[in-house]
Length: 112
Image (cartoon, rainbow, N blue to C red; front, side, top):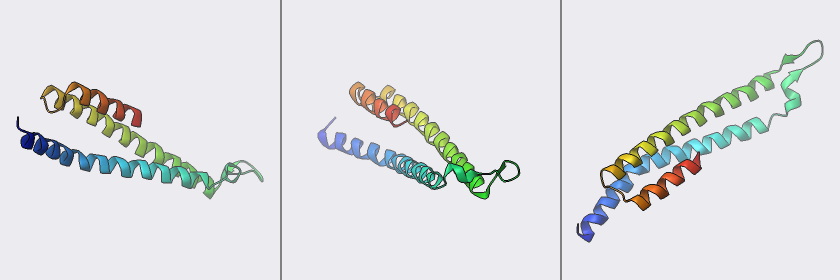
């Protein structure tokens, strides 16, 4: 394969992966935002203990942030799993070599 064809193939591959990388970057930022929002609510504010233990509005808000964070983490992990499958497919089809496959697989696993 000529150098020009190799460069074109690499650019096509890069273009195909860009949307995935953008979605995963936004997911990581969103997870971080949820973590930050939850950290702003002190654990002591989660419960009202005057007469009986009740969850406060702040407590429900913190629990909601945890729930959103878990949901986004699950989506992130599912996307990484699909990316690993796609990498394997690219390797089997000769789009990437063994060194690329191993390196990119390691990066995806570490990102989880």
